Image 1 (cartoon, rainbow, N blue to C red):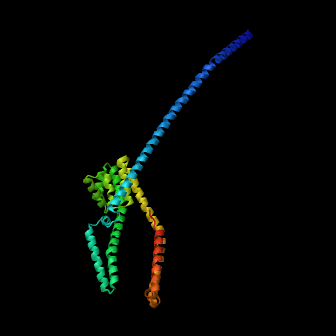
Image 2: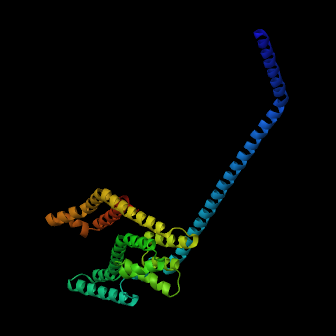
Image 3: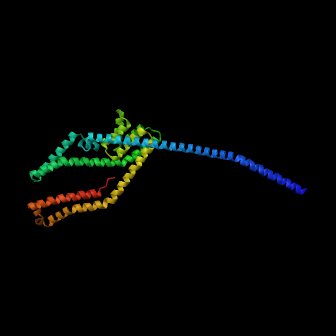
Amino acid sequence: MFGLDITVVAIVALVAVAAAAVCYGLLFSRMEVEKKADTRLSRVKAAETDLAKVKAARDRVQELSKRRKSVQDSLKDLEKKQEEKARKLGGGSIKSRLAQTGLPLSMGRFYMLSVALGIFIFLVSLIAGMPMLACAGAAFVAALGLPRWVVGYLVKRRQGKFLEEFPNALDVMVRSIKSGLPLNDALRLIASDGQEPVKSEFRRVVESQQVGLSIPEACSRMMMTMPLSEVNFFSIVITIQSQAGGNLSEAIGNLSKVLRDRKKMKAKVSALSMEAKASAAIIGALPFIVALLVYLTSPEYISLLFTDPRGHLILLASGIWMSIGILVMRNMVNFEI
């Protein structure tokens, strides 16, 4: 009985396995087709997702390229306008230089002071017993060269003071804009509470706005009285922001940081080149010092240079070579940042 039961169980198990094998054989093809269909469907969905990602990335790249091209076109237009404006203003003309000094000095008064200085130097030279030709030369140099040198010195000094205070003014603008003030009020705040000469320059910007100019145009006009690359950066930032939009406080804050870094770099370069400048000054002054010492100790020995025609030629050639050497040394120790 027990053996019969085992035989029946084995037969039933074999029948079940055979039935399962038959079902698997009949359904295998359908299962494989469904599996391949699911795999193909998942691949299609993944491909669609990848295509969407690629399309989105392509759209972002195109948008960035369009924005970059727009910024480049804006910069080119700004450079052309500034070149035309500099050409109209005469760049380094004495009229523009007088405006850059910040002094209420007209062209007529400047020429009157130049003529008066020339006459004064002529009379002093004549009283000192100098020859008439030497008096005329000294008066000519004093009337034409000395006033222009003084104007250039005043312009350089004012520009240096402006560069000292300009990053602080930009920081004030950043804090004002972040606190909710519009750009107009930030400019008025600097024009009223800033330090000179930044205060005067921003007051001109505010006055230009009051007569109908836009903020970018008013800021670009600052180049007339303060022709510095830093001011050019500022006007470009304002112009691009007005055309393309963006975070103005962040842009001005970055500009302030760049200006401070430029100032640090200039100070570092000046410190590193100070030794070379001192050496160049000593080398350039050495021939004159030696000539003066020789003249004080043995005037008859060096007097041939001033009395003999060959000495005049030697002095002329020496002056030419000295000028070339001083110019070369000056270019070697001066660096533009």
